[in-house]
Amino acid sequence: MNARFTDKIVIVTGAGSGIGRASALAFAREGASVVVAGSSPEPLEETVRLVKEHGGTATAVVADVTVAQSMTDLVRTTVDTYGGLDIAHNNAGVFGKPAPLADLDLAVWHTSLDVNLTGVLHSMQAEIRHMRANGGGAIVNTASNIGAHGRRPGMAAYATSKAAVSTLTKVAALDHIKDGVRINAVSPGATDTSMSLRPGETDADRAVRLAAAVPIGRVAATSEIVAAVLWLASEDAAFAVGHDLVVDGGVTA
Image (cartoon, rainbow, N blue to C red; front, side, top):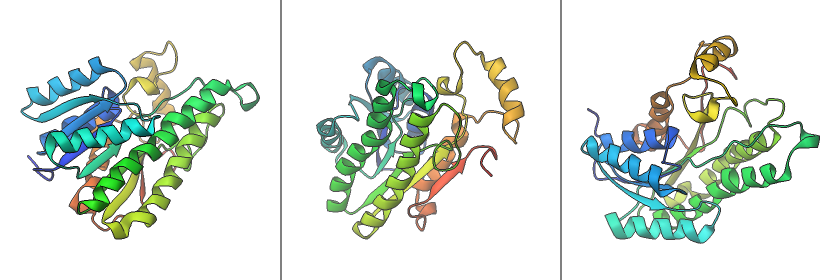
C-alpha cells in the first residue's frame, strides 16, 4: 500500500458521497487524517464510518461552502483537531436542472455559481491563509470537462461555473505558489455517481448512453478520478502548478 500522505492533514469538501467520499477514503488509506466536510451530517458520518472501518482516521464537520465564515471555521476546526492543514480537495458541487439559456431558472444559475464557484473561492481563501502562514500546502479543486474544455446544450449554469473554477484555479496558483501553496484542478468526465444519471435513468441505461458518447466506451470509476486528485496533491506532482487535469475518457481530446 502507498503511504504518500502519512501524517498529512486533509480537508475534503462534498465528502458525503461520490468523488468526495472516494477521495476521503483514498487519502485515509494512504495515511492521512481526513476532515470530511459537507452540508448534511448523516452522509458525512457514513464516510467517517467507512474510513474507520478500513483503519483510517477521519472527522466529520458540517460546513457550508457558500458562507465564507463557515469555511474559516472548518479550517480552524481542522487545525484544532489535528494540529494543521496540509492538503485540501475542494470538491463540493451541484448540477442544476438543465434548460436552454432563455428558459434557465435563475435560482439554478445562482445556486450553481454560489456552490460551484464562490464555494471554491471561500474554501481556498480560508485554506491558503492558513497554509501560507504554516509552511505551505497543496490544493486540488474539482472542475469539470464541461466548462473550459467542452460544452453541452442546456448546461449554461453548470458549464459557466466550472469553467470559472478552472480559471480561478490557475490565477490562484500563480498568486500563491511563492507562498508555498501549490494549486491545481481535476476535470472529470461522466463518473459513476448519481450526478451523471439523467432523471429516471438506471445505471444500465447510462452505460448504454455513454458507450456511444465516450471514446473509451464507459463511465469513469470514482477511483480513477481520485487517482488524479491524489497525484496532484502528492509530492509526485511537485512541479505541477496551475494545471487542470482532464480525466474524461477522451471526450474532449
